Length: 80
Image (cartoon, rainbow, N blue to C red; front, top):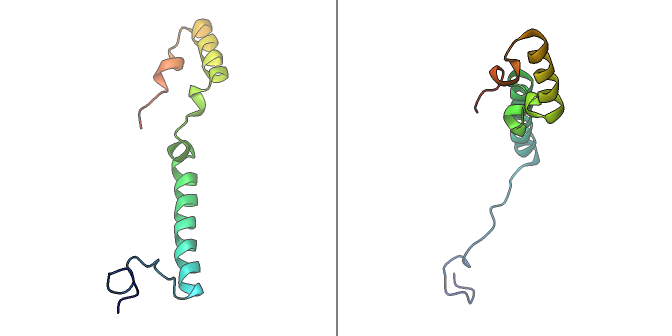
C-alpha cells in the first residue's frame, strides 16, 4: 500500500506497545534490576561518582593520613 511517501506501509512507523500488562511487567523487571544492582554494588556504579572522590572526604582522608601515617586518601580509589 502506498500513501504518497513512495514507500510501502507508509515509511517509518512508530512501534506500538501492545498490552499494558506486558509493558508494566517489563518496566517492573527493569526497575527492580536497576534498584537491586544499586543496592548490591552501590549507587556509585550508576552515578559514576565515588563518595571518597568528593573534596571534603579527600580532605578528611588526608588529615587521617597525616595523623596516622597511612595512605587512605589514595589507596581507597579504584577504577570503573
